[in-house]
Length: 70
Image 1 (cartoon, rainbow, N blue to C red):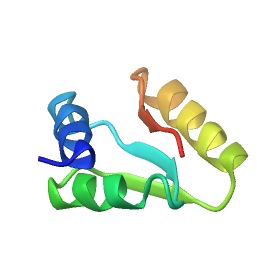
Image 2 (cartoon, rainbow, N blue to C red):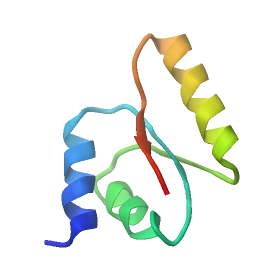
Image 3 (tube, rainbow, N blue to C red):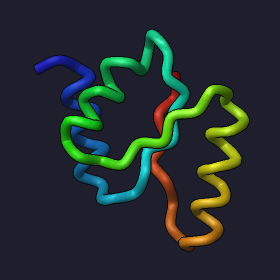
């Protein structure tokens, strides 16, 4: 098992919270694995957008999003 598969499985086990991520070389394989497991992913073009979206989602739902750093 690759590291990206193990991390994706761990994130998917946390529930149905969306993953907010900036797509990059460091996160590309992880995002593919997360998508394969059916977890919701929100990819952005800038780090600030991921933070703002995750913050808005958390405030509106009262839950915490899962975050992947690139």
